[in-house]
Image 1 (cartoon, rainbow, N blue to C red):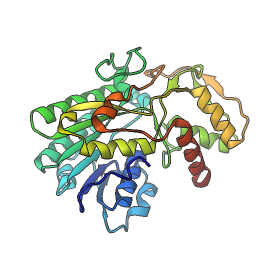
Image 2 (image 1 turned 180 degrees about the horizontal axis):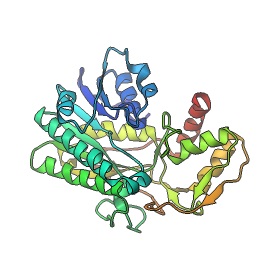
Image 3 (image 1 turned 60 degrees about the vertical axis):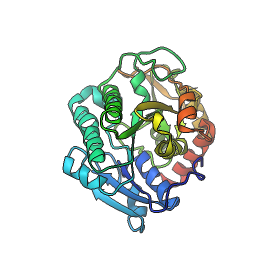
Image 4 (image 1 turned 120 degrees about the vertical axis):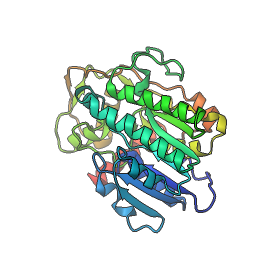
Length: 324
């Protein structure tokens, strides 16, 4: 882990939105292991009940089945909460290209609902999921906060708007907000069955079944694949970062890039399979290369990721071997 030495006052209460999702359920698990109280909020639109079943009877856990688009639900969820870790959102660039309005509704309206509810309920800090997609068509590598291009999808636009709201709520209303620009997060509990599944669990499931995988484009697009443990560390450290860190977005990654072809080759090696992929047309809205400069998060959030891609990748594959 990278967060075992992080300490909060006894009885600290966290709200995790999107608690039945991949990142949300891992955050809940970490908070409970550390001995603090966690409240989960999810409407199961993309989250899975199986992700939270093991916590349901935990004495420090409570769960609200509800929707961030409903303001009364947001108010109820924020009642008597110290820190909000807001992960609830619709992901998937391709889906957003087809259904932009539901992204507006969920990711912008839902997030502003949560910020307003947190403000009214006196939450100490609001940490929310942003995305590396906010860099859009910027060709600069590595990606540095403050050097963003034009966004390439409705999904990316919703995340950029979230960051604007986060700055406004910090500056105008005094709700301390921190945005975390996740770079291609992967790890245990990531759903391989969704129509818009992330590439790593989707590929693992196909290869385990002996099926050929499809790689978009030539496979030479690169990503800063980020293991879930690093993301948990970033969320918890953001709660305790100095006040001057608020109202901004931060790159959350490991700071190294691998091509999809390299990732696929390593996966085949770990799973002991030898299947050639099928290359298909590139996807609209996808970014060609992604690599994060994480110096700002290191300086202001004390973020210090311990898990390289290869270390996390082996852990993730072992989890999927047992759970798929």
